[in-house]
Length: 243
Image (cartoon, rainbow, N blue to C red; front, top):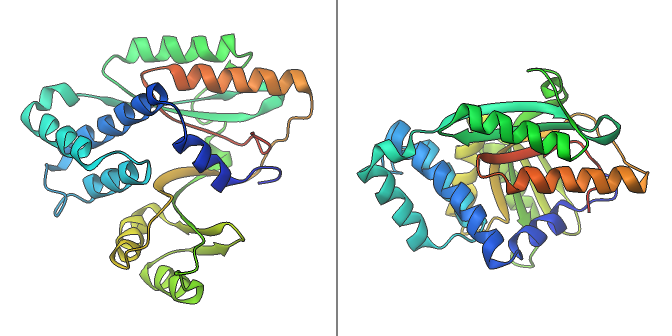
């Protein structure tokens, strides 16, 4: 991903202020609630919940906050009656964007996402207009530390089902198929290795670079507007030089 460090981006996200972290924790709590509703409140038998908890922990969500989210969802299942909706569209210069919403009001979510695209100089598209440019993958990122044996970590990841292992000066990036993500993540967790990020995500097959300063400003505005929407859970794009 030219001109962009994924590890730097993770650090930037984790260093957000209290109000921004609060929004992130709300979204993570929503994912936990949906997982509890779908398969129960026991992470030992609910793989989706285990993955949601791992994602929450990698985003520095406190354990007591995670526990409260689980208890709240298991005690009031009606409060987690959310629907998953995916929107697709374009940013400046044809940058591909996928927006995942988790909402209890489909009409509100659609209107708000469309408004964010419009105000951010983008365009909502039809289902499938950009999703063919992305692959759903499990992505685990681990920062490099002296205590981590690279060869041992690579063999463990591949033996557990990882499809790719990439090492850099900053750390290690492990890709899996979605169905293999839990097994690989849990194997790494058992070694006691801290993960900077662990989630199912959308990986672009090609990237778009913005060189015009006005386009960059518009793209940043669009991403900010989408991030501010309460119904929006995740935003994926193929802009290569995000700052």
